[in-house]
Length: 250
Image (cartoon, rainbow, N blue to C red; front, side, top):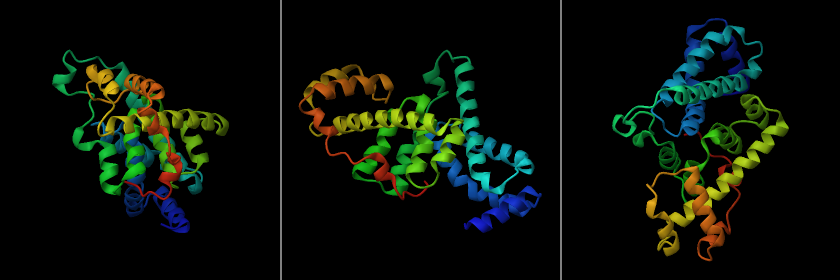
């Protein structure tokens, strides 16, 4: 959609045009699902968070001053909903049998990494980067979802900073820290996928349940740094942002 048409659509929707609202929502959904889906990694509540973001956007739209700021404003609303989702999870009572009830679990059928790989046909190092996102700390997942879209050319750094409610300088620091995690995770993914796998790593993994986590990222990375076999998986890696340039929305 061209910028002039988008501005006209936003103005019409802001003025109450029902058809314009429907078109605006339809145009926003791919971006919102990419942001929320990657931040929550396919959690069962992704649809609910996207829906609430859309509802809040529509309720607040009459007060939007500048159509030019619509996208950064929308992304900020999505970030607030994601943070609210995490707060609700942290404050909710823990079920007696969380594994049996299935609460607060990622839906295997909706795993956003698998969806990304399948729909975009990712292979090689692009696929590796997508798989590495599973290992990023939860506190950095919202930033990861925005940075991914920035690297793909879907968002600007200014929009990322505004959505995170951070200064450009602080955003740059946070991005560098998150990218360091992602680079470490790429080594982890490479070591785990090796055929045959390092026998010393197999010994370390004896107590692992197979689920990516920050704790196991650190353990596997620590092994890789001191292992003549696994340390090689950090060589020849193309910078992640270079791999994401031009990627479409999922």
